[in-house]
Amino acid sequence: EIGSITKTFTALALAREIEQGRVRLDQPVQELLPPGVQLPEPARAATLQHLTTHTSGFPRLQFSHSLIFGGIKMLLFGSDPYADYTEADLLDDVRTVRLESQPGTKVSYSNFGVTLLGFLLARKAGTNYEALIKRDVCRPLGMEDTTLTLTRAQSKRFARGYRAVVRLGPVVLALRASPWFDRNNLGGASAIRSTAADMLKYLEANMRPEGQPLEHAIHRAGADQQCLKHALRKSHRELFREDAQTTIGMSWIRSQNDSLKQNMIWHNGGTGGFCSFLGFTEDGRAGVVILSNTAESVDLLGITLLNELGQPSS
Image (cartoon, rainbow, N blue to C red; front, side):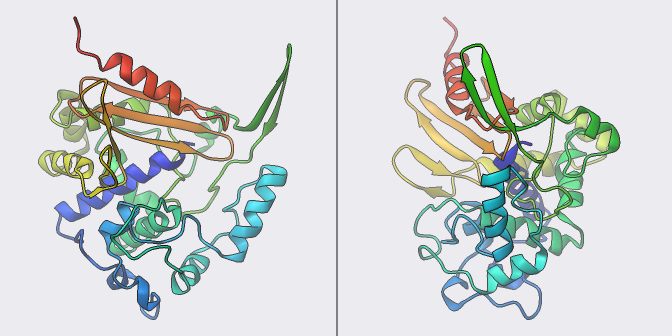
């Protein structure tokens, strides 16, 4: 489970849909909701750009009863908090959302907002989120092992996730976690499963959109090369400045790195039993992907490696 790195896949799908003229970055969220579903008045100024940059003002998590109860079960038993969360729940949460800030004014990280973005893009495309991501991202990049729903063969290779690890001298105690988003297609914020090999393809495509491996993958998939290259670059560009050191692209975090004298573009992820990190230097010199099957953060390791790899050679 790559967790919130999933958000960058949703962002790339958004960039591709924009390139194809199917949606607009400044398009109001309200325009893409199903008939009869109305945002509260304060939220009607929210656009797709606000959702992908975490500036919509939407809270971090939805507040449906099923998700709250699922969160309690996760803490007590390591179960999937999204097991009973449905499209009806999402739309009920949309109807009653209370903003934490006015859209477009500040960054407030929101799984809710990006879950809604994935749902809206899939609905606009007349499909579901998994099919959209496979069409727009995975197949063009040759990522055959990246999915939401595991095949029988993939299930046999799926790593066991652990929500807690306690070391007592030579003894290691680990608490298992249930897989997240099992048979749940509202996964635009966190639901993708992948492998190191596939994530290296994804990393290289983001580092060097004009590179030969990407061209070969796109050619095999029969996709439009220029469209995907433009979409990759578009997803990285600054859309909102949080402070002097940090800006936000389409879900990508852009951190000014004084040691490397350039931006580090990155995202991390965490579910009940997995943690992940993917980052690269803006000049494409170096990139790192780390996948772990415990809930212990790997961010520091990823950033340290990227700092070392990104230094100009002597």
